Length: 255
Image (cartoon, rainbow, N blue to C red; front, side, top):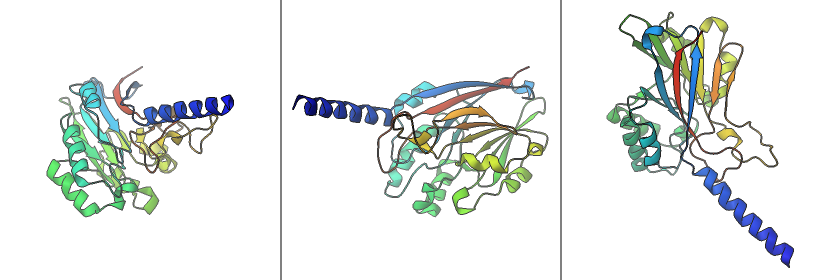
């Protein structure tokens, strides 16, 4: 009987811990140096948030980032089936208070009326990067391009179109909901950084094991890849070993 009570208590504690990890409001900060980052830009800060799903973005996140970011990037799965558009609008309103917002489609975003979602983006001034790019230019004429591709799971992605839309002599950053877009990146594309989500960092790791690895920043042969654990969850609002997160990424010139 005592053993059963102990097991129940441990199970309850684990459940509460998993709920806590699923609803954390942490902003992971990364400073990344690139030898070819345009010096005239100084430092550029990006706020990246992916896989919001059913969550409402906490004011804690907004307060932690406000005044510290130049660009906001939503890495897909802003919403999913069953989420009211009123919640989507409230989340976009909060993100817009941080700076200009850019969005790439995730698989779950297509579960809703995506035409209406697209109209909401237009109303809020959110730029959708669907196989397109946006260019930023410094006072000295250096260029930084943010590229985005559409949903890979539906074969909507056209990295070649996004690259054609980008200045070939720019410092290139790519946003893609799916991290495996890196399989399509060639050295000559000169994409220096990829921002992605989708996997939820495995979401629940049992004895350290999950089908997907925890979110990480890693150097690949042709680029540097950030995979986020994501901010929300779908189906089961629990996490273990892959806590909810968002990212404040500062880019600058290195040696």
